Structures are given as C-alpha cells and as structure tokens.
Length: 211
Image 1: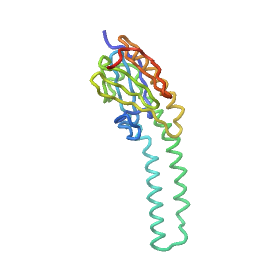
Image 2: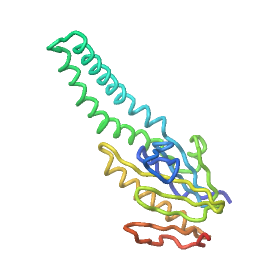
Image 3: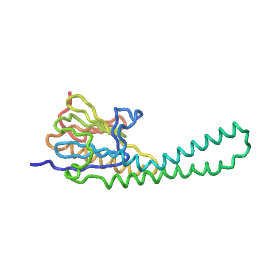
Image 4: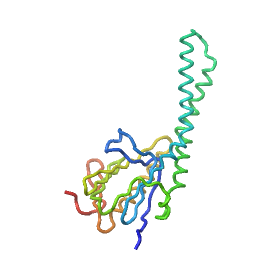
C-alpha cells in the first residue's frame, strides 16, 4: 500500500530555523510542512516570499540612498533648502504600504496557491527535508516554535512568525500546523508530542518517551 497523505500547510510566516533560537533567524522563511502516515516533508517557498517583497526592498533602498545623498549634498554645499526632500520623504509611506500590507498579502496568496493537497502534488515541489516518521522520537511546541527530536539525537526546528498585516493569518496557520502535527503524532505507533506553555506541559500525543 502507498502512503496516506494527512495534509500540509504552506505560509510565508512559517520557516525552518537554524537552531532553537529565533534571534538567529530563519534558514528558510516561507515554508510548507507536509505530512503522510510515514514521512514529514518540508517544502521551501523562499523564492515566492523574496519576489513579493522585492518592490518594498527596492523602494526602501531608493529612499535611503536618496536621503543620504541629499544630506551629503547639504553638508558639502551648505544648501539651506533641499527641494527634492518632500518627494524623497514621500517614499516612506509607499515603502511602508508595501512592507506592512501589500507584500505580505501577495506573499500569502501566492504561497497558498502553491500549497500541495496530495502526495502527487509534492512530486513537483522542491523538497529540502524528508523525515522518516519511525525515526522521530518526540515533538515539542513552545510558542512560536515547534521542535522535532530524532531518535539519533538530531533536532529540527520550525518557527511561526508574523509581520505587517499577517498577524491574524499566521495565527490561523499555526493552529492548522499544530493540528496536523497532532494528527501525525497520533498515528500508530504514536509519537510523544508536548505543548509547553506558561511553564506547564500538556501531552498532546502519548508515545514512547525518549530517554
């Protein structure tokens, strides 16, 4: 028999982490964890996120370069009036509009259109992580991070962040992701899954505890 597809979730607000410290940043921002009854598969959507945020970055860069150039010109020439300054400052709300609203919304829509809904959909997706379910020892959730401990002692980390207009969307995606992890861990044989919040531990799925 073939693998059974349990589901998956793709979002620009989900990412793989280099380690267990969010401050060290995402190795991939824009990610899709997918689950079958025997594998956890990771698909990066970094290119989509990068493309959608490019206009915001370009406008911000133009604003910074223009402002620095005007300040340098004023210092060198002693000019009292900088006529281009209002136009340069006008780029600020434009850049913010892209960063806070337009780019996050576009990234969300494009990523969701690429979200796989079956095992066949995953064949053409660029996978960068495939974990055997039988090799996973336990899963731990501690907002905003999900940690996976392998029986070999190796760790894998996923983070769920939010910025701009995406706070509500990221919370919904997190809820879906946790539900999928719980379903994945509840398959036979079960994998231990813990929810650590406010120094309390809730057992979401009871399997063999790693020694």
